Length: 410
Image (spheres, rainbow, N blue to C red):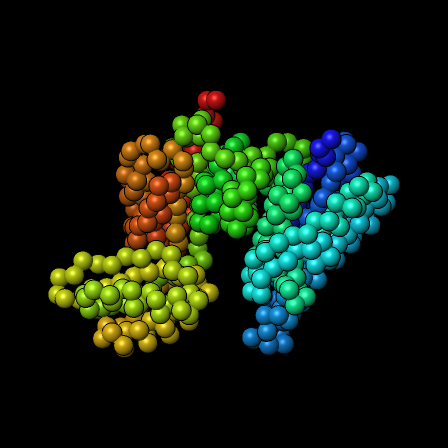
C-alpha cells in the first residue's frame, strides 16, 4: 500500500519565536494524527541568517564562502531541534536532521550549491517507525563532506527535492501570507489571492521579484511535476496551488504583476557598430560571473551606438570596473549607470493567445505619467524599467488596468 507522505516547509517568520514554533508543532501533529507521514523542512528563526552574515562582516569584509556556509547553516539546525522538542511536548515522536544527515549531496558551489542527489533511506526508516522527520532546510554537503548552502530561499528547494524523492502526495510551503497574490499586498491594497497558477507563471513571477518562493525551487518542481501548495502558517484556509498548466488558465490573460528594485542599469556609450562587438562585451561580463538581465542597443546613426543593460545592484561596482576595461579595449566611450530603477513586469499564460497586452500595459504607464526606459518581452511576460520612485505607482496602475483586483467569474 502506497504511503501518504506530505512534506511541509515552514519559513523563518513561521518559526520566529517560541510561540510560533509551538504553533507549527500543533499543525504538524494535526497532520500526523490525520494519518499522514510528515516530513518537515524548516528555515532559520526570523532574521537569524541575516544576523549571522552581519556578524561575519564585522570580522571581515570578504568572508571565505566555505566558512560562511559553516556559519549560516547553523540557523536551521537551531529551529529544527527546537521544533522536535515542541512536538515531543505534544506527545508525538519526532527526530531532527541536518541536510548532511539525510544525504542531501550538492556540488562545490558554496553559498549557492546545487543538489546532485538525495539518499532518503534514513528519512524512510524513521517514517516507518512512525516518527515525524524534521530536516534543516537550505543546506547539504558536498562529496568532501563540507557543509554547503543552497542560496537565499534554499529551504524551498530542500522541500521540493525531498517531496520528489519521497514521492510525497504534496509539498506545502507554509509562510506568512495566505498564498500567491496578483501583486504585493503591501503595495496594492486590493491584490487578490490566486487560487491556481502554472509552474511557468510562478517561475517568472518569482524571478521577476515576487518573493514568495525561490525560483530554483519552482524550476525543480516543474521539471519533476511536484505539486506545491503555498499557504499561511497561521490559518487553515486554502492557499495557492502551483501545478502544470491547464486549459482554464489560458482564459486569464495576466496572472500577476511583480516588481524588482534590486537592479541597476549600465550603459557603454559610443560602442563601435561592428559585427562581434556585442559578443566581446557580454562574453567578458559573463566571464566575471555577472548575470545580465535586459539589454538594449540603440540604432546606429554615426557608426557608433550605446549599449545599455541591467545587472543585480550588488554586482554594479564589479560591472562598472569590467565595463571600463571593455570600453578601453574596443574603443568605446564613457560608462554611465543608474541605480534608481525598478523593473515592473506582468506575467500570464494567456498572453500566448491574446493580443494587445503590451499596449494596455504601456498605456497604463503613460496615463500615469510614468516613462519607460527599457522593455523586455517573452511568450508569457512583459517587463519595463522605470524610475524607482515611480515603481509602486507603476505596479498599482498596471494592476488596475488589467482588473486584477476584481473577483473573476469562475
